[in-house]
Length: 160
Image (cartoon, rainbow, N blue to C red; front, side, top):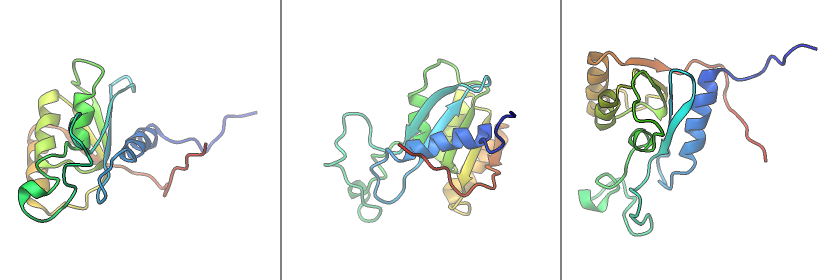
């Protein structure tokens, strides 16, 4: 008997964890998850986009448009920041961040400051936005490797 051949790659596995984490987000429009992995391929942090701990997701707004304070933007913590804040180790130097959506400029700052050396992303749908351009500029300037997930898989299925 030989080993099975249809197992998932490390990149698919860790991105799968990021996507699974995104399913915890209560945002009605955009669900993003992130997974931080050490150089030893150990998961050391996960997160998803949502309000800070203790802030009611029933009382704060989820709107995308309107007066700034009436939208989600001043309140939501992005998946990358939550994964960093939820990290189980003190140093993320050399770690890889797997994230469903290319990081914004604010998350790029946190990624750089923590020493994460590589970002693997699934979607880059805001590629031409000023936030993404600033993010890419900072990440590249700091030497953070950027990589779009390469896979032929269209889905990973979980069954209970």
